[in-house]
Length: 87
Image 1 (cartoon, rainbow, N blue to C red):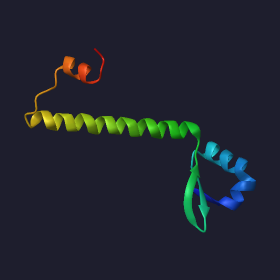
Image 2 (image 1 turned 90 degrees about the vertical axis):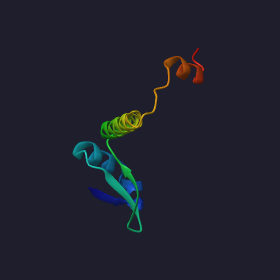
Image 3 (image 1 turned 120 degrees about the vertical axis):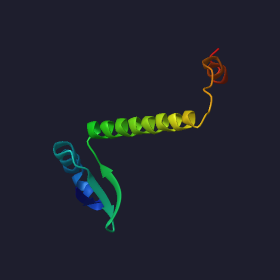
Image 4 (image 1 turned 45 degrees about the vertical axis):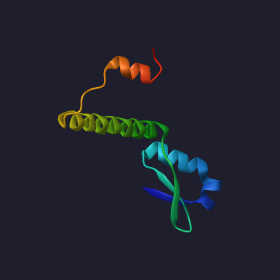
């Protein structure tokens, strides 16, 4: 991963964007040596967000399995729809 100061990014933003897109590696924007933000390829970000959502779904499914194994009764579908105002 490369780094660029905010000051440099003001004059070289196009180069930071090109580097992130071409190398598929974030360019960290720094101030006083501390990372503040990153320039990342849009498609890479989409993949990361989708992976995070998938991971959250897997964790929710695992939690539901554990809850079910512990003896919790499933909530009837009609009750779920009513709670969500879908009836």
